[in-house]
Length: 475
Image 1 (cartoon, rainbow, N blue to C red):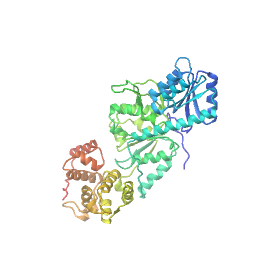
Image 2: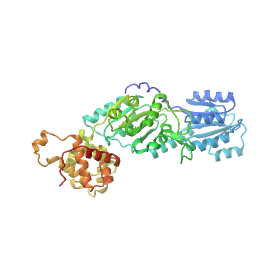
Image 3: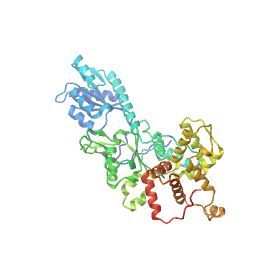
Image 4: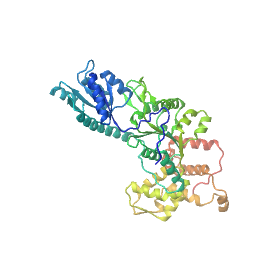
């Protein structure tokens, strides 16, 4: 495993797994003592002299645990507890300290959502133990929130082909670094899978992996989704919401389809990468971004730059390291392995007949691994026997595979072998065949192809504007 390199400029390289706690107490001596003693127990403690300063620090950064005195000038510890729970919810636990402990205060603190209640003089070892258990609870809740918001299942993609082994070697070299990564490849080639593999090999592996498909979020909401927003920032923003940059703190943020974003958003993302700071929508506080960014696109970003649709400065900031993923037609020897892998995911102990496997291997898979996975899932659900035959294959897959064996009308087999079809033309033919199979239903065709309806419309628009050789209808 290679030695991690320096982080990209402007993005914090802090990747420590230390617990972090905010200490709020108006007693300078006790506050300083707790910060020093907790540091000796490998807990990073940040001091705040009162509740107002504590809330300002919470505005700027994440703290899984807050330790607060009850009696303080101005805002009391119980009021701070209420404010923290209103703003942070269960993502931050609060431990309350007091030198004037009463049963009533203890009950009020616990009812208000406090994790625990300790009386002064506090024992540092006891406090450290409660900080660790409270931090673990907050981290579990944060992980659960991330799991509910993730955009993909995280299924591993397997392969033994030379093309895929090249990708795996690059992942092994790039993963342990802290550099920003750009993943290139057509839709469905497994870019998110590779991003997760990079995260697992990094020093951030114990922290969150957060993914978002930028093309699936409207331009007006993308900034809020990534940076978060304050209450009242816009219509419908009834309360503060943390963005994905905050939820991914200390971990990896995967920005899929980055080429679909507008230049205004690109400028804001560039600022985060350069300065390591961002602001919530409607907020003034500059927040720290300790996040490794992995971006992906199926577009030619250099061509997009020439057309004025992508910023060249952002491109060079993202493209510190890059990996280009092969299409499935370039790694056909992996198809049998992938078929068995996807069948196992569905808990199916099914064999695939040689005829069916031969057709699956011959089919061009313009939707790549995603399309193959969808086809296997369909077969696994609908199959009734213990062996999948060629008849169990989806109709469009069987027709597409058979079309590869037969020369087009007016062409000889020798001519076809001497002049292979270009991949773009093969994709065009397949898309039209699938549309014929769905009787023109574009939404269904897009699902079969494993692409968005917008992508399908764009391709059809491009086909209509460019002269192409006629396509022989499927028999």
